[in-house]
Amino acid sequence: MGSQSPPKLPTINFSIEDLKPGSSSWLSTSEQVRYALEEYGCFVAFYDKVSAELLDKIFGQTKDLFEVPIENKIKNTSEEPYRGYIGPNHLMPLYEGLAIDNVTSPQETHKFRQLMWPDGKNNFCEIIDSFAELLAGLEHTVEQMLFESFEAAKQYESVASYNSQLLRFIKYNTPKETDATLRFASHTDKNFATIVVQHDVGGLEVQTRR
Image (cartoon, rainbow, N blue to C red):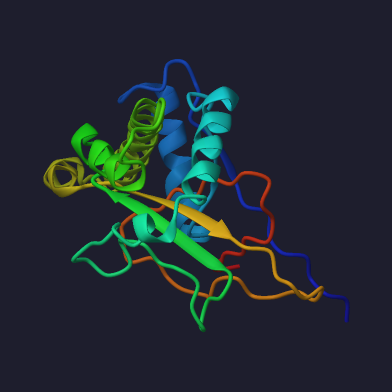
């Protein structure tokens, strides 16, 4: 018996010019969103509002962030589990992550910047705020489409009022050995939706129904 190739995830275009609630494009895209989530649990989003230039700036800031001294990184704490700094440990020796909770609030971005760079950091807050606003907009669109497809638009209004966004910066360090090494254990995110933005990093695996 030959091995089966993994399913190709659907790609959904969110850059359509007239993608507004009630339009034919909105209804068509909503159907695609619901189908993709029911059948695969995820999809690839085409979203050109996040430009290549902005992505380069984001990952440039991310590179600088992980070069911050460890004594600054560990100040990134949270009462919620897995929301502060997570450094390499015996379970995940190649993983490192920092997070900004409620990232759509400029005050939170500013607080984070002060922890990492007390003397300031050029354009960090401006870049992060722009990026967070765009991704929050995409998340809102997807969730609104999903709720409307189940005829539960009014319920989404109450859900959205409690939503907050977490932006996590992740670094997977290079293993010293030449053989493949697991960099992050398999897991299920507990939040309602996750947007993964990759930058020349392969190896991401997702579990699908197919």
